Image 1 (tube, rainbow, N blue to C red):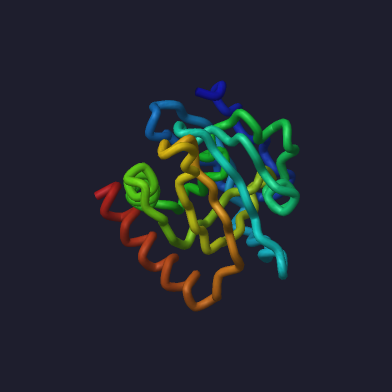
Image 2 (cartoon, one colour; image 1 turned 90 degrees about the vertical axis):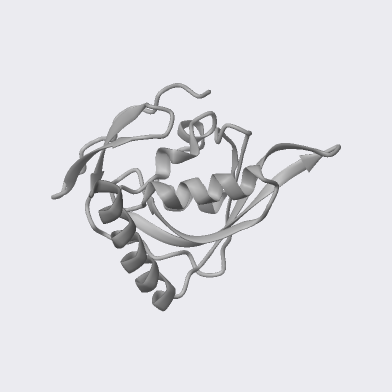
Amino acid sequence: MGSPIPDAHKPDMPAEQITLTYHDGTSRTVYDTGIERPYPDGKLIVSRTDLDGVLTHVNDAFVEISGYHVDELIGQQHYILRHPDMPKAAYKDLWDTATAGQKWHGYVKNLCKDGSHYWVYATVVPNVRHGETVGYTSVRRKPSRSKIKAAMAQYAQMKQNEEG
């Protein structure tokens, strides 16, 4: 288990302050500026985690778009990037699928260190060594705008159901 993730720093621009509580019971304050970062053309964003979702590897594209330094990411829970608009059920589906040894695909809105966000089309696969799952790899590609629009509508509905 990584150490608790510190609260985000308040950005120098208007931002909504939100407290997120994660599946493991920890919580942190984040800020959402509503500003979208464009996905970097021609790049794949790659990370690996251990079985508990703790980051063990991030590539340069991941570091660049997230706004975090490598040493702020390695050893932290992958949910350091969780955007408050993402429904819990989306992550439950991802983890249920991956822990069952299956490949998961989906659209994810991630929160950057500065309160901006970016959308990805993610593929998560179990890393299997000698017949045992030792962790997970996530590869993110540039999503289409129409798929992002559809995901936004679906996730807003799912969030409403969570809170309702």
